[in-house]
Image 1: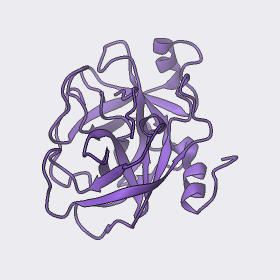
Image 2: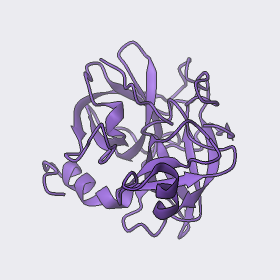
Image 3: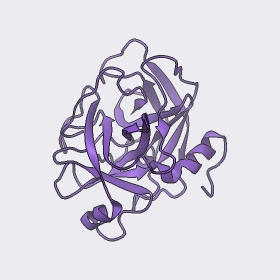
Length: 246
């Protein structure tokens, strides 16, 4: 399989605890190369970024319950991906529609402590305030990827303020931004989750790591695919639909 050139965007974070985010999974090649992240939506589907899987996906697999990148942990579930569905609006030039669903060859066991689905933010109500991003990405722009998943808190940035940073028309309704001084997602975190841990007493997935200008640069927020905009499409694909018109 090929690997995404755009693996944009944890800087300023700390190591997550074992099993702290059971919905977080790495995407790996047949040879075990880890290149992006994803989120467990249910026992058969993983949500990630389209740019992570826009190419040859032969041998693509995910590992639920993974913690240390270069070793196998007890209870890991390695499952092949049998189908990749990119959002029909995905555009490599504008980053619009940077979201994809991965269908697994067999269902995950979500009754165990280190694997679980995350609920989606269906109406955008969870997308503001303090959010958390997690992944195995680099801890500095262009640096080495982390052995263990990292987590960092970032603050919601309005689309208007984010567009002022990137330019008119660059930030669409299907995107959202978040930033905090010295903190960001970075290379290798792409496709991973941006989530609100305190939304009505629940953890909700609000964004998918998508793109940005470097990592934790003071004048540029990280840009994420806004999950609430794509909920209808996600539900349609999971239900066996084509996603057309969603």
